[in-house]
Image (cartoon, rainbow, N blue to C red):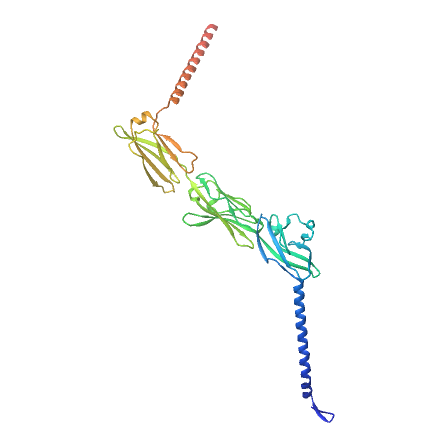
Length: 398
C-alpha cells in the first residue's frame, strides 16, 4: 500500500526503516539502566553484609559442643545485638556485644569466647533433643538484620565392656551400650565361632518382647532395652566360646555395632597316682583335664632325691579340653620323709591346687588324732561310770 504525503509516495516499509534507529536507541538506554540497577543491587548486598556458618555439623552425645556464625559487616555497619534460635525457632540466647552483662537465654547453653564479628554458643551436654537446625541473627545498624543457619546431627557410638571369661557351667554376662536409644529400632546379638560360623542369639525391638533363638532358649536372657543391652548365658559351655556382636539398627543412620569375645574355662580336677617300677623307685603321675591346658609343678620340699626332671605330655580331648600328664620318678624313701605335692596352675584359678602323692602325716595331724582318741576314751569311761552309779541306786532302792 502506497500513500501520498506532500506529493511524495509514502510506504509502511519506509516508515519502519525510519523507526529502527529510534528503537535501537531506546533498547540501548534500557540496557544501560538495567546494568546500573544490577550494580546498585550488588553494592547494596555488599554493604549489608553476609553471615557465614557451617551447613551441617555432627556432635557426640553427652558431651559439650560449640556452634558458631561469622558476619561480614558492610561499610559503616554497627553490630547492635546477636540472637540465636533453637530447632523450634524459639529464642535460645541473646546478647549485646557492647555489654558483657546482657547475655540471657536457656540454661543448657552458654556464650562461648569468639573473635570479633563472630558469635559462638556452647551446648553444655548434647542430647537427642538438640538435633536440628539453629539460626544465628546479627542485628546491624543501619543495614538491618542478617542471619545464618547451621544444622546439627547428634551422634553416638556403641561401646562394649571388653572381653570376658567364664567358667563352664557358670554364668556369662555380656553387655553393650548406645547413647541414642530414640534412634534405635532393634538390638541384635550374633555369635561368631572360632571357625567363622555366625548365628543369631537374641534380639529386642521396639514395642516387643526379647526373642531368643532356639539353640539358646532356656539358658539365655536379654534385657528389654534399646540403650544398655545385656546378654546372659547360663550355664555356659565350651561351644559358647567365640565373639559376640551387638548390632544397633538405627534410623535414619546405618547399623552400628561393637564386638566382645568370650573365653570359656574348664577348671581342672587334678588326680595323683604312683606305682613301684623297680625296687626302691616310684613313678608318680599327676593328671588334670582342663581348658586351656594346666601347668603342673612338683614340690618335693627342695629334696634332691628326685631322679631327674618331670616329663609332661598333653593329649587333646574331643570336647575341646586337654589332658595334661606329668610324670616324676623319685626314690621310695622320699615318701617316708617328706610330703611330695603336685601343684596345678590354671588361668581360671586364683591360686594353684596342691595335691599330695603320699600319706605322710604331719606332727599337727598326729597330735590332733591322739587328742581325739583320748577324748573319746574319756567319754566312754564317764558313760560307763554313770551307768554303774545308776545300777547301784536301783539295787539300794530294792
